[in-house]
Length: 123
Image (cartoon, rainbow, N blue to C red):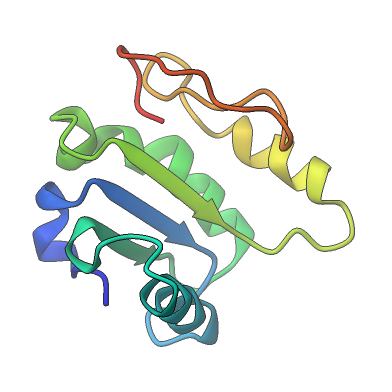
């Protein structure tokens, strides 16, 4: 499946999910990616944020992710965040969107919008 944390600098895509390291969400995501060949096995890493809740994920996106070596070096080019949306997915999207530093990351305007190519920021 995805790489472990030690190999982060080689991952083109980092998947941040609201799960524990051995949680069902992480296993399902990695199984779907492998089964449907959505990403090459050696091109992504799945990060989980203990205890697997939305606030921990949001804090990671705001305070920790921008300072990670694989982000600062720009070796990672895509960040995919997978969290529970409950009954209001558009509201959850906006919550997550607000966590990204706009000087470092390019984030689409809405769930339906396409992400325009931006050579200066990570996607």
